[in-house]
Length: 219
Image 1 (cartoon, helix red, strand yellow):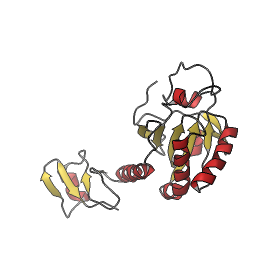
Image 2: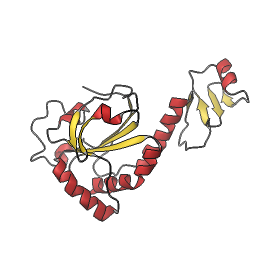
Image 3: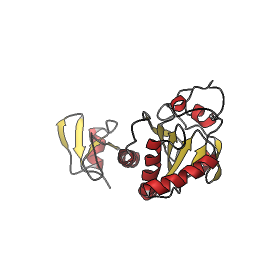
Image 4: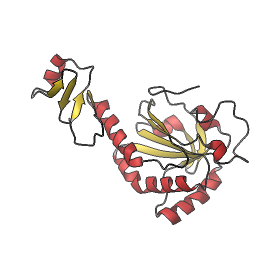
């Protein structure tokens, strides 16, 4: 089953480094960032886990929970977490899912549904497509999907920027332009008529083209 933005994120139960969870119940009324790894003790992923451990307070401030996944047992995750703390200078507080039966990877279309076997004997190369990021809203809908190659570290500063945009546009009828950052001008959504926009933005807007209506970021 392929997944698309605005699909309901598949629910699952799984063992994690913080105990067993029901994914939807674990999300609760928060946003969630689910990010996956092809195998434990891989170099690029080690740097990613450490960086997220350092900036987790930024996600907490945005009401967003972090959860990782790797195709290895939870016991291996616990040992890997010690390496992360030693080499990256940050202790992992968020849970890491042990996906030894490949069930969650298949559920999220990161591996083929008919992929045989378990994590035993698999290499990072055979799990290369398990390098995805999903942002899921409090409504349990998928808001973002990204998949990276194994040799390219993910840009989680960009993920924070996208999260800011999505949370802003969920509250207000606006969209954010190219390279937008918090506090910069935004665009009135195309679904808003000019008459409605006049009510929302009585001071008016800049409009170099009728379809491009620029206003200050609402608070």
